[in-house]
Length: 408
Image (cartoon, rainbow, N blue to C red):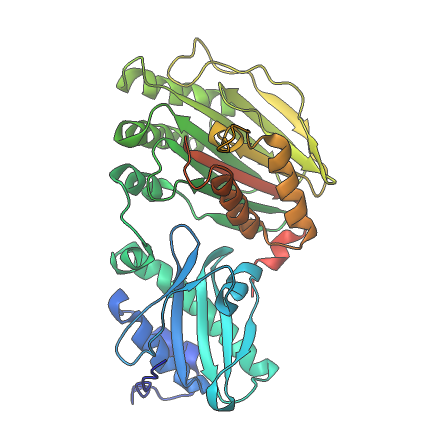
């Protein structure tokens, strides 16, 4: 592997604080120079080489961000690599480097959202103080990655291992961060097929003391389904931000779909609201699979909730249903593409398998977003890599302590 020399820190940097110096340099920093400038300022920590690695859209690979003066690297897998271990476990990992040096891999987190990892090649073993400085640097790099991604296509292009369909482009533009964590709650979601998703989507919002969640499946595939889903998400957010209750939000979504799309186009959805202080969960079911709860290693079905018609076909607002969660409960909202995924032999993936995977992930100490990544990988593997329908899922964990593991 060829090693490139690191560009010396700018002479204008008057102190040895890499966080302060990088922050000063960041205000007019273009995305195309992010890797270079981060490497320049990481040299203040004694880093011989510094590389930003970003997860691809499917979260199968880590892709290095190139730049002038940045050491050359090749794409690596998230499963089976040292860099991937830091990403999967959401914790720094050390590995040996040539000439007695050490590679320190630090997760890049935007809040609780995993973006990738930061690699630093250091002389010898870093002490605790140096590792903490590296963590702080990684936090700033993650923030810079998000802000640069907001107004440049450079990072989005890097993360694509193949082209997105137009429908998928629309859907990815709608999604919130895949993971959110705060005191008492973790929300994480996933969807497949990543590069060709059509009508499935999800959304959430944390507005203390409640967390709102929505999973939606627009009928059909491709662009028409994506456009319907886009309108539905807009109506959902408008109703939510206007302070409506769940039945009225659903009614507003129904009206938009009925008014703007032909009668043959509709969407099923589950809308939920969790009070993170009390654990009370409310939801409405619009022709959609009912939520499930995983409790103490077992699948629990909430009280029966009469399903309303799908959005766009309703005769009136859906019925509001509720249940009381216990600390440690995991609530799962999903589209039928998850549980109805069929193996080549015709076997459904099913709710029991879904719950079992979540339980086993918890016992293995996996972070919630890693649980979702592996779960969707299992759904794809169950269908031999070819989904017959879009699949979308959101998991919310209440008072599990898992939120403490999603920071470095």
